[in-house]
Length: 204
Image (cartoon, rainbow, N blue to C red; front, side, top):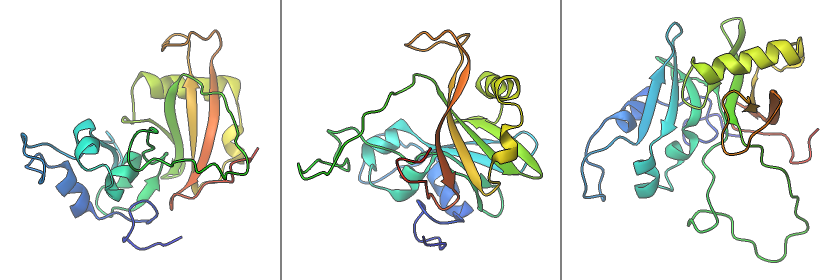
């Protein structure tokens, strides 16, 4: 994959100036409504890290923009723009224009369970494994994920690749969503490289 800054979905560095422009609340042609930001960013309280997510308004108006698609729990260094962790880029519902449209010629299909939880990323930075939710470096979901990892999967991070981000679905009955579960767990969804690469669909 490319390591240039040409494609935010695969590059190892994303221009801090570009991110700052997308974070600014201002008119966004061709949209004629009130000014708005394309990306919302939160800062780490202690480390030079920032976590970026596209805004709802942005995806309605600029749905094909690669930087917006990349900005889904995307973590970069504040001054360098180096990518520290990626989660899944934006995906699309069937009715949305960029979505994959089946042709009828597909060789096979796989049906998987969709666990109803909260997205969690674990990544290596400054000498240790760090945890983030979709938009925050701290908070109840981060604390819950660290608790579950510590209590149910001791030593798991010894097997992790420090160049990758591990993306989980956190299931935590004390913070229920639509589906009520009875046990805490972290469900591994994917292992994502800083260039956006992932294992094959059938990895175990």
